[in-house]
Amino acid sequence: MKILIIEDERKISENIKNYLSEENYVCECAYTYDEAVEKIRLYSYDCILLDLMLSGEDGLEILQELKRHNKEESVIIISAKGSLEDKLKGLQIGADDYLPKPFHLSELSMRIYAVMRRKNFGSNNRVMSGEITINLLSKTVTVREQQVILTKSEYDLLLFLIGNKNRVISKSALAEHLSGDMADMLANHDFVYAHVKNLKSKLTEAGCPNYVKNVYGVGYKWETE
Amino acid sequence: MKEKKARSLLWMVLIPLIAATVVIMFISINVFYHGMEVELEDHLFSIVEEQDGWLIQLEEIAKLPPEQSAQILQTIDIDELRRQQQQHYDTVVKLDEEIEQVVITQYVVTLILILAYLGIVLQFVSKRIWKPFHETLDTMERFSIDKGTLPHFEKTNVSEFIRLNHSFEKLIKNSISIYQSQKEFTENASHELHTPLAIMQSQLDMLIQRPDLTEEQSEIISSIYSNVSHLARLNNNLLLLAKIENRNRTAEELIDVSRLIEIVLPNISIMIEDHKLVLHSDIQDNCMLKANKVLFVSLLNNLLTNAIRYNHPQGTVQLTITEREMVVANTGENKHLDADTIFRRFHKNREVSKGHGLGLSIVEKICHYHGWNIEYKYESNQHIFIVTFTQ
Image (cartoon, rainbow over all chains, first blue to last red; front, top):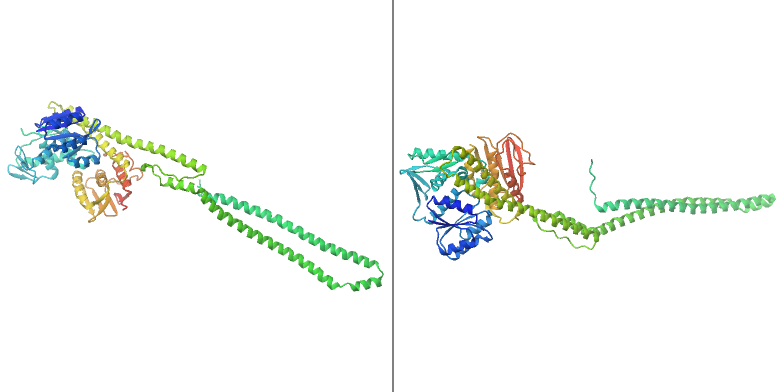
């Protein structure tokens, strides 16, 4: 899968690229408006990550350019311009998602995963990892044909872990993912621990090996091998 | 010290004028009265002179021989003289009374006329003269710096008022520009912080992927993580505050509160479970509210988070919404909080500083933005926040 990262901050661009390459995504970077437009015209991508604040240029124009050429790419806006107007405008023109900076790489990876899933919805509405099968339509989880009843938070947590498999996810990224709009109001992330613990025990009860690895106090990691 | 009662300019002018009028009238009336008395004296003198004439006549008669004098005396009509004398006396008394009456009537009538004149004319004149001043005053009273528009002062041709308006305009222009740049500073600063924060966060996300991290290093990273998160949250909330302050009332829509609550409550439930609290919500059916949706959600989230955060385990949170008001009540520390300071930025309860210190400021700003009233009280061991909607 090919991803174009349009972001003028090289450090961020580089980190996104490194993080996503674990997922077998092929990433290319564009640092300026012209570079981005050129790449979009020459090649085609599955997903484009678009920073709205490219030096001197309005990133929304790139989005319009894409739509003018009837390009099929999914677009996720990553922006420091956190204003709601920009979000609505972006989504109106045809962006698939909007992620305000600063974000966690694991959250970004999850959003890409979701956008891609929606795009290929007809072909695949199941996520499998080890003994676990998740039906995204009915939002049910089965372990060896046997259904496991999870709360909404636990279900989201499981998807997030699997969506970032083999990589360490920080506790704060998990907390922010689980709390959604409330993220800015949470002062501590201890509640993540309880949810992870519950999820773990439910899965092991259903006969699934423990795939959730605790990485010192930093976070968690989903490892099936 | 006792404060002096405020009086209008009209009164300040009127009072000394009335006092002066009364004093002058009093003096002039005395002078006039004395003048009249002199007149009266003259009249009395003429009577006395007439009597003197009679006396001389009598003396001359007395010098005559008795027969002759008796003859002359017989011709004098004593009664007539008595009558004349009485008449003189009556005239004098009447005159004196009349003068007194006339003087008093004049005094009263003139005083009333002058007072009426002063009252009416001064009222009228002062209204006309002070009209530009009152207009300026009204304009200034309507002016609010966060609207950011320069007030329009009515044209006037009185030089003092022209000066006043000019200096007001200058002052306001200055204040607005300072206020604007101050506001923009927060917003710009917050924007500028996003990028370095994003870099730090992504660097950390990469750093924890390294397989050779020791436990000690992990702990340090964990601590940096939570501080970066804290910084990011703080920044987002500051930005939100700045934005509420910088925007005019736009993007308001009719919100179906009951449906909105169904979206908000599941997010809250994570925290409710975590703190082992009980949440009661009582939302009026088909409750509609005209508000900015994003801000209303933020208001709800902030109030509820606050109610959860400063609660004790097994406590309760009660949410009541009607078309008229929203009430969030929670158990917690058995102490009345200082209603004046809790809405201030970064004012945190020192013993339990769990938040970022902006939540209630945001709540207050959102209420202010919509023109709603927010009130805090502590009643029967409950901390209660009441938002009164004005539609």
